[in-house]
Image 1 (tube, one colour):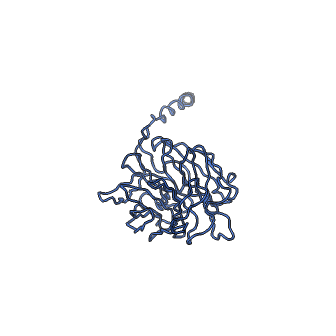
Image 2: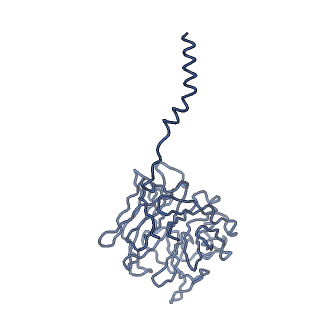
Length: 336
């Protein structure tokens, strides 16, 4: 009798247990209220954040060994929370001179076209190696982008600055400048209207050095209340000391005297926080810093993820140190 009862109970459990299990594990949908950090999955670094077509866009480096780092993805969002991936907006098949290390993109919208600037090949000797900073063009911020020149825009080493980590800055008068450089040196050059080359400055110099003390790489510039804020990365990109510093000037050419550190690691959150960009909500004194960092206890130098946090100023216009978070930022739709 006991054996029959036991078998009957087992049969009942076999029939109904899946139903009970489904009811137990099924959870209500929870609406996401903050972006979370990282803001999208995958190993991505050196993010350029920008607003295009009334959406937030992020253009990062695909973080991998240089030989596999030969394409770029982009991400767009209406509200900083929900992100759409745009895969392979450009790769080395569209840029024949790039053999490795396509990285640190910057983007500009001009004349209904989108111009994507990028580093390629990680050159160390411009007499023996082909590479430097390239430019591509597309009709959409999602690409596909095509090589504009068929060769680097900057393929030589000027003022001992490695041609990497370019940022394109639009001044108040509409003039575009390229600010770039690795190896602890930073140059500024005046771009031609069609982005095919550079126009010398009045003194005849084409590549003007503007290196502030402590500069390593990753320059970025913006204007707030008539002042020029110049930001850059310091330390080693694979180490925990990677960080962002800044200076303020009345001119885009400086002089830039280091004021302090804006972004750095938090041993409770992440290490290696650096190589950033800044987004301003149009018409508002509302600022966000987009950057990469390395998860705690990670030893692979390429494991970097893209994050976003708020950036604030004090009453004197100084940038307050940024608190890096796991939560990220709340939803911030843009007005149409």
